[in-house]
Length: 370
Image (cartoon, rainbow, N blue to C red; front, side, top):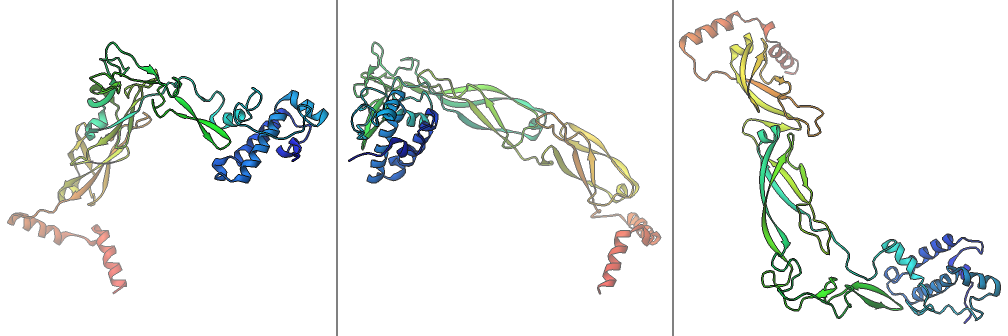
């Protein structure tokens, strides 16, 4: 059956550039790929036609012949397609398609690529004081290492891995899918390209063993729960000569019995007496560095927040330093002597309602809504 004009098949003009033709092909090949169409027979035939058209137009010599004679080789344009290797020894039109899927230079066979080793994660607990000042900690963890007995080959002493007979040492095998084929990881060697006939006794041929590791870590000042430290190169070794992975340490800052943290600021409560609140005073309060003096202004109300600047935590980026917020709470004595009672009664008798504006405002609202 006569085939359509390849320019019409790809939807391009006769003046289209090679790049325009290539882009048109990639778009159509992606649209009618079996993974997209679920193996639809009509889509399969359409893809055959697209590939046959592109096989002519991607080749400047074939394209010139077609433009001049209406065929690429002096024979009727049949649009035949035989899969990879079915184009007279030339490139398959799928080369451009796989470049699109896997990138230029994407691996389709050959020696196994180097792969970076696995990253590791662990959690490290620190106190609030340690988080505020920074601290050096020793962390212990386990990771896989290349077996020192077989030097990471997996083979027993005096032997060595042999090339896999199924993939011929490439780590890849060709698998047919309808009218074309693709590369897959070799099921026999798992992509390594080699198999072990006589495995190492220590690692049982796995080439790796689990070992314990201990390192010292500098925890910077200002860390919080969820902060992450990256220790480069302390993960597991790579495959096929690839680099090591990294170690990620996630911080856990333990709750403090006195302080509550919000960002770089810390909060606490301090009880004061009625006379300290009324007359004013200087009291000592705890901080993360020790004790500090806090001035209580005369007439301070219960629940007032007073600030100690710079006594919080540093910002991890080093831009600022948090404060300590002290909430003062007036503590009423639970037991008093006879003399204290007399003095308080005398004080109450001398009290002026103007000295208690909150009580006066409350009484006024009560009268308005009663």
